[in-house]
Image 1 (cartoon, rainbow, N blue to C red):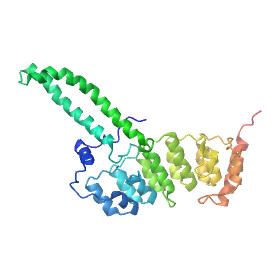
Image 2: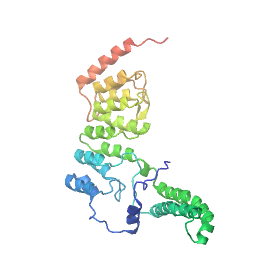
Image 3: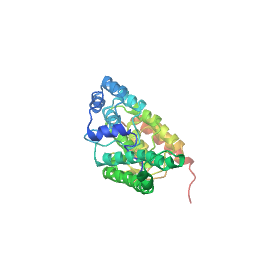
Image 4: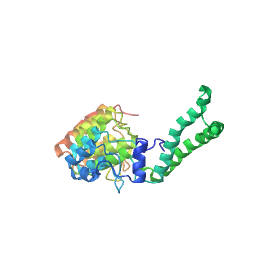
Amino acid sequence: MPLHHPLRKLTTSQLLERLLGFPRSKPRIKLHQAAKQGNEEVVRKAIESRYELDEIDEHGRSALQLAASSGCCEIFAMLIEAGATLDDPLILPVSMADFCFICFRLVQHSVKGLLFAWLAPKFYIPIPSFIVRNVPVWGSAHLIAIPALYLLSIVLVSRSYPEVYSNARAIIEALSTFKGDTEYMILLFLDSEPNLDAEEMMLLWSHAVEKGYSGVCQRLLRGGFPVDSLYVHCEYPDIVTALLHACGTSHRELVFLPLSNGADPTFMDNHRRSCLLMASARPYTEHAGSIEECDAILVVEHNFFSLCPKVG
């Protein structure tokens, strides 16, 4: 579990405002609703008023996730440009974790006063003697309290693990749920250089292949996508490689990409289907390539196999 804390980006005054429910200096703007409905003016006002962009709604969704699932490209771009987080933990609703983290911050701030109390006698600065006598005790208490409060806050936050720590995955899944064209938003997402793990890259590749997004696939390959790794198909219980998946969707350009990056065409899926068999089965998805593309793939793969050295 990551040790970076989702509340660390907030100032102490913001934390107190959240915990005590102080009214905001500016009226609360319904950012999540605006992001979902595509209301650019409201989102722009939220950004200008320094609204916390990474707060989640009552369903655990960030404004960025809602913009992605609604296909609002302009708002998605505005939020990313304004600094909405892509892979850091999201900010949860107020809980005991806030109280522990505020105590952690306040104890941190009191270290300065403790340091002054320790140095004051050395520079002949008058200070009450009972404070000087208790500096070692207070110092020991600080050494225990600071890590204890931080770790306790982390433990309280981790009760929502892994949802809190999977923002990038949640954004990818939100982009996958939108039925329209999301290639521009995915490229914006990748341009922001999120820290994607292997599973998130495979999820993104699977979605891009299904939609025929060659630009996204090229970007993932440049980023080190493992072309011969096995993953579960995004819609069917099939275990495939990048090349097998591309053959099944009959996108000729997407078949060329893994082949040109060293993909092994001899791999089979969990049903013992080869690349040639997947391509010859004809398109079977909503965004699949045409029959002509399918025939072109068969010709290319037949020629590719004929050039492969025979074993045995």
